[in-house]
View 1 (cartoon, helix red, strand yellow):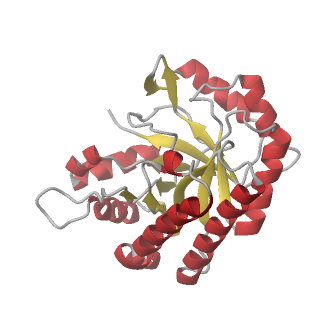
View 2 (tube, helix red, strand yellow):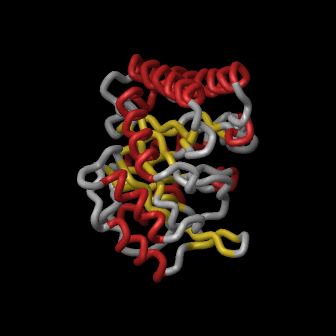
Length: 286
């Protein structure tokens, strides 16, 4: 879920508070057999998770087709969640150059968002329409993460709000009762109070359920700085829907499993907050 993170591994720790685990599909997943997928889901369930959030179903032009066959690997994962009795939140189209492309202004930016919207809706109405009939389908996920740097003009915020609102409305036309989720992160470009107010307004305008990342794994902000943002977002009561705990850490340009001490720091940090949903990013396997 976090910017250009590829090598993330599952963290075998007590995460009972978080019931949703994110699975970030990668090319290497296509080599997983069906029994191997089942084993991964069993491991996730044993840690207390009851819901799998698939981060995306198309990554640029990559659709996760199994080599030499017409089968899409994600269809195996979807089937396995049903058999594992896990709820499924399903991600749509992700532009791998999203944070480069959104630096454009005006009509160019609007056209980019329209293309993302079209590709996501194509997936929801064609390739993966069938999952809406499954007993474990629990909603959609939009992979375009909301940052606190690129949308800080009135026009920019209106453009983003219009895009998200139109996407949600189109998905609601397919599945009226299914929630639509997306995520957001902060990196110090907006004051905490302004950031929290903006996200709360965005939720209200779009009917999205926004999940904000703690940023603990990225390590760009200090614990006190992170706390200031989370206080504004979740105290005295939540202003947005959910919170994403990070199980990875950056160190000297490398990404690795978060060690026990910083993980416990993160758990302590989020203890005062009671979001509607706690999510863990991400499931990666060794």
